[in-house]
Amino acid sequence: MIQLKQDDEGFVRMNRHFPKKTLISIVFNDGSQAEYTGQRLNGLYDQALAAFRLGNNMDAKGFNRNDLKIHRRNAVEFVPVVAGMEP
Image (cartoon, rainbow, N blue to C red; front, side, top):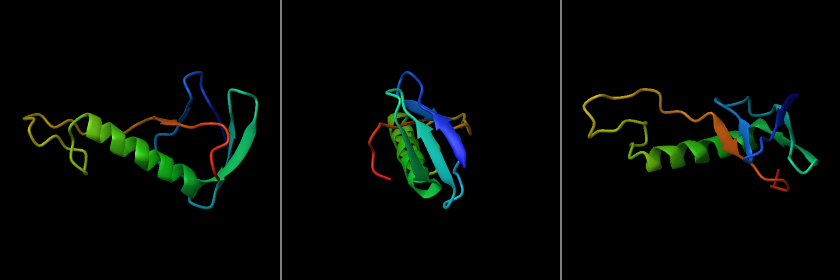
């Protein structure tokens, strides 16, 4: 089991996908705790990555086709979570 803790801004650190069937425990700021599967958190990671790329004018692969210098670091490290979200 992997244990994550929500930071003061409402995020957990997640810079990669977890195995789909791994159980992940999150301790939220309000003191509650919940368990999720890796598949559920991978979906949240994918949503955060898509929002990051959209906000930075990148295509689906993470490239800014208008920029002459392509920056390959187009990943997110923090994923927003809220207490009481569905498993």
